Image (cartoon, rainbow, N blue to C red):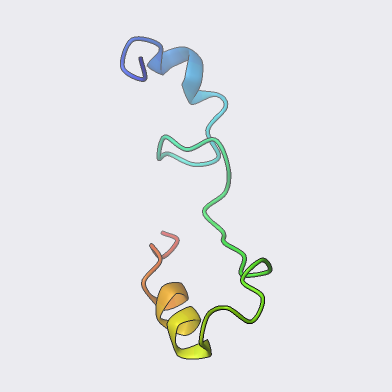
Amino acid sequence: MRKEYAAHLKRFYWSEKPMFWGGSYALISVGTQAPLEKLIAYVQNQEKPE
């Protein structure tokens, strides 16, 4: 579907990559369930902005 409607969908992307929202992330919903080390590793392993 993305290939078929690429020209139409492109105007809704936030960047050159085919995504409908920004590449940011939030850790507000983890509560006390995850150790801090796991959260830090998760953030560090996210794709970096170009």
